[in-house]
Length: 187
Image 1: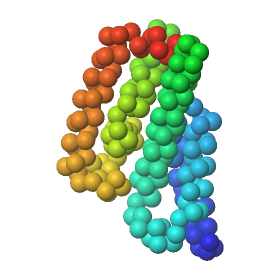
Image 2: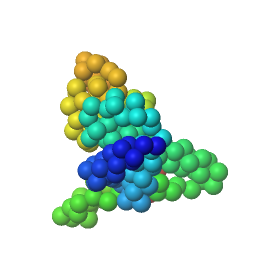
Image 3: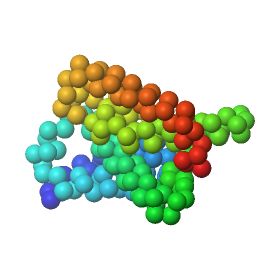
């Protein structure tokens, strides 16, 4: 690997490391996992060719997309392991921890925690592309154009995917609230 490329990766880590960590943390809700994801992303950059580096126009959006993908992959893996564990031993494990800003009352904090866990669970039930588009738009607040550019879509397709994903998530969240899954499956 060329010295110039190593230097660029170090600069990217300094400039965007907090952003990558923050993206991963907001999705997985665990600082240790977010640190691992951040480290893995920068290690993957060492494997890229110089030509791949030249193709990146917006490093912030590119790295955010990588963090989003890696975080969603981890959520899916944890969800699969959790389902397997439930089948094997009949117990319910709290797969994801949540760290959010304290709420004024314990009841509100519990409700927020449950809602976030439920959303994370629902994101494992939509396609990978739908989850990425949703997270990039509503968690990372990227524009339709930035999302389109980094996922090789058109802005119109981003809008369609977002609409479809919001509908799917609403159905999934409504179903789990109606079945009591919100408080039973993750407690």
